[in-house]
Amino acid sequence: MEAGITTDFSHALDYGTYLDLDRVLNAQHPLSSPPHHDETLFIIQHQTTELWLKLILHELLSARSLLDGDQLPPALKRLARVKAVLRTMTQQWSVLATLTPSEYAEFRGTLASSSGFQSYQYRAVEFLLGNKNERMLKVFESRPEAHTMLRGLLDEPTLYDAFLALLARRGHAVPESVLKRDVRQAYVEHPELVPVYREVYENAGAEWDVYEACEDLVDLEDAFQAWRFWHLRTVQRTIGFKKGTGGSSGVDFLRKALDLTFFPELISVRTEVGT
Image 1 (tube, rainbow, N blue to C red):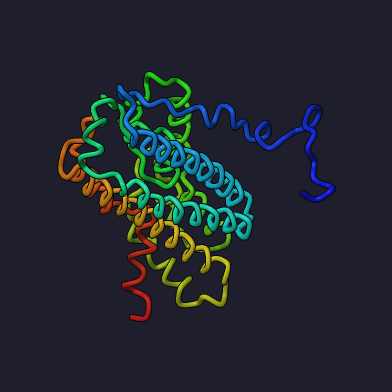
Image 2: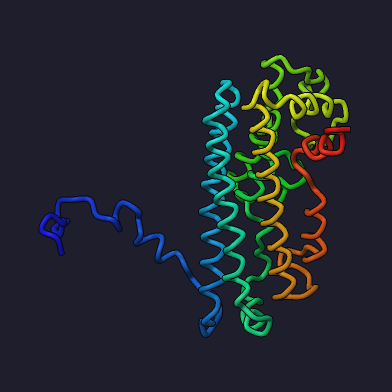
């Protein structure tokens, strides 16, 4: 103990109070009876994921706001943090993968119809990145606050919309049809946007920050897809091809998500560059 270390917290803020640890560390409530040893792992895995998703939302909303204000460098700083969080979340699947099929089967029934499909924060991230689906809102009708948040994000431009608007303000020939698209719909590829990106990539030195932003968005997509992939692999090694507890087809449902892309033109332009 060093002489200057604080030890009296009768009138001072301590670590546990600042972090509200009494509530955080008492938020794990296994439902198996008698309590199954591995259910605590399952709960903490998903609770920590939700905390990381909260941070991702915090950063993505800030990044979108910064793009709206033409502040590209700090927006990219936000995306760098999101990518770091996604890498951590991907590595975290290795912890859940220590749960064997037989161990999970012993308490899976206690989940009843609860499922990660019902994560409103995950759905919010998907909406912010462009994978919107109004039908998903029905899942959250019993949670008014979550439903209201998702309804708001459905009606608002995505992160990618904000970036494309910034490109237009910077003088790039972003088609009007892209700028005025219905933001309530899932983003789909606009082939007429690919030449805009080809110009950016073949003249990277002209606007390095825009070129860097394009690559950062691709990095973000790759990080998200890596998380999706290891989600699928972890589920497959734990429950095989059983149905999900929330009623989905399980692994087959997760596999379909791997075909989704948030920034399709940034992938397509790679075929055109240098040809």
